[in-house]
Picture 1 (cartoon, rainbow, N blue to C red):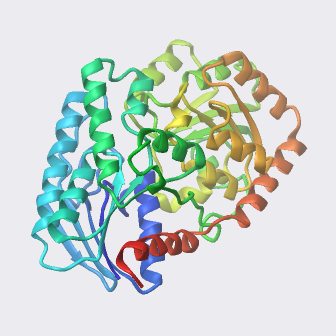
Picture 2 (picture 1 turned 90 degrees about the vertical axis):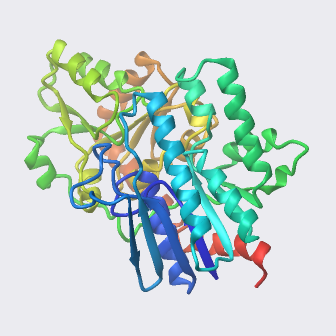
Picture 3 (picture 1 turned 45 degrees about the vertical axis):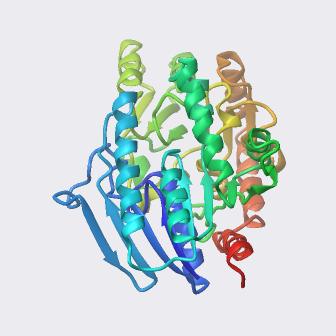
Length: 411
């Protein structure tokens, strides 16, 4: 089968969605499929084109399993929403033209969102090439930005909601990561084929991510040796309640054995760094985003991992870092909405604790209880690892997508 994939990130870009699509692509090609990727030049780490990739608006690489065409993403500061919207629009137009002008045939087009407008590239490609369009939703837009208060204008909300439903209705199938996200989208498609929403769950590569010793070169490099480390690793943006980490560090500032780490970059980093400086939090360390090759080492360095999401966000987004944390045999403390994928997974796995979002007292209280019982932390980590070892693999997810495509293309 010849599969055309449109996605915003792909290896070696370090964005989590790029990791997901790279793994799905490998699983599909391992099954003998031919895959052609249209994506952006690597830019996620610093929100600018990475060194060695500049100088061209477009680069194409032929591989032994297909091809990768990388386009200029017109990167902007994430905090500048109008500029970011224009950048997404420009990339979508560029990707649409690239997909429509390709000489090679395809049997199906798979598109990853966000960005939501990229769905138009998939829809137009499906119309002009007469092939099915499958829409993969990682975060539900505009729900995420509405919950964050980034978009408050009722006309803008109606516009993006209409765009969302338009694209869902024109896809052959919409794939989501969990049952709660399926329910969200099925409600929006009521009367317009809600059965097209399919759950293909997230996965974790338990071969790539292995439990490793805590004391490693990452700890040594950042002065963490011998400490109890509470770590947040990921995007430092406005979707995360990282003020909870600041507050937990403030309340534990007298503990010489305990250190908090925020590892990553993003639009909220400067503000958080300034707050930590004002509070003189010597027990809070900021570390830049690490290369993907160092993922297992970073995960292993923590005694407790944190997943703090703003209120309402866990109903529209599933952080892929959760599954990597479980695979590393480390416990997790999450601040998320109840009855969502993160909370449900933690409960099923017995791999940590979750509390209501944006509740500093509940968050710090749960953290104190976890820190007071190191043996229990070890048991939670081991339970998480055991849980994901029996879970879906990248190969199983690749097979699920292949079977879905065959529903539209035939065997």
